[in-house]
Image 1 (cartoon, one colour):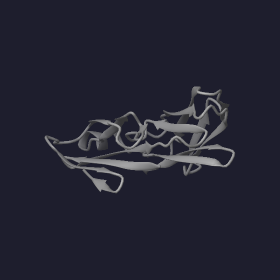
Image 2: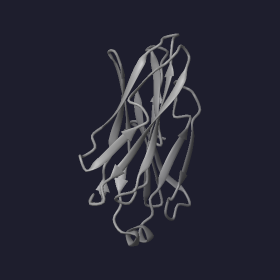
Image 3: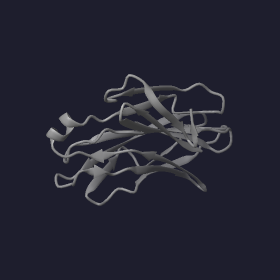
Length: 178
């Protein structure tokens, strides 16, 4: 199950997601980065989907970005991968907003599916306006290491771009504020 992780510091917010894993199923799935600072229209950014076979299974897993408008295109190194038992593989998804994409948030999800097993991970993404906007307002980013784990595992949060952030005001992990 994926849990949103939100950090608030100094007036800036950053988001990521964490997958609480179990030993059931045929594959484990994560997406990196799960939060992308806004990019300019016409620029591109890569998102990497990492897939690992579980329980000595050999699943064929398809990767699909969902929820983006038609004026933001995507391409992938491959649409699906067949994993050998215990194998880890990656698929790179390139996200490209058209030159006429209006500024704003365009969060989307990446779906991994194999037979009846479907997993979805959110990606926080946006398109920025002019560079003058960026100099006035910064954008915070957050990363988790590892991006998935079992209950009780340790997770390291790393962030950057928090304006006037001498202290963290709030960390929310799923429904819990810690």
